[in-house]
Length: 244
Image 1 (spheres, rainbow, N blue to C red):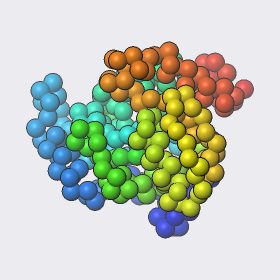
Image 2: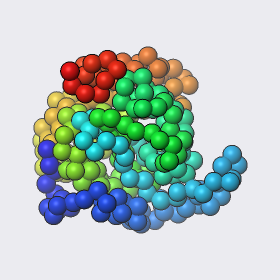
Image 3: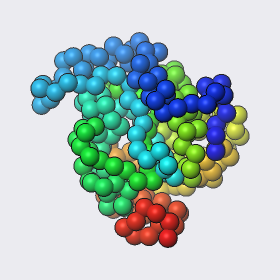
Image 4: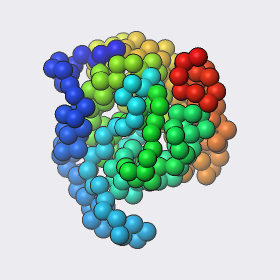
């Protein structure tokens, strides 16, 4: 399952990787934006200290499921310092993970809220909050080595769940850059794909953004069905995150 790249030719560690992610300044536009947002803040969060830095992935380091999102939200992860934590997308995601038995609680408010994930690790193709939620291709390319290194450390992965078209494209580009032959494929909600690479299976879902949930493009029932499918694929009993 290891992705062999120049970045992973030397044995990595979680501490080293997270330190390098958090200290990254490769993309001037993103650095300026994330720090400006952290400085000016949203009125509702005036009394809080914003993270204002790149956000590393988090979760179960023995996970078999990797959830891959787009990038931190300006007043979500860019504020809290944890993926999908503190915004409406996280409300939808962690509620679904809790109902499926992959999380010990349905809410994610901050890094010290007691949230624990089982069999799931969450990360994103972009690590900094981008203006208008639109990172450039160059900015995403700068982040891809971080994703490669996370996957190399997550040695038990069996499936990648991509949330949205940008994550779908980003994961496939990472595989191509790593030397794998990636067939053409169309992003479809609920789709599952067999790919050559360190992880053979990729599933796809609409991103749980407010734009998708409030318009009905992605309903709770649709999102729950995605995680039910993952449980079935991994042979998990209802209410359990362990094989059985």
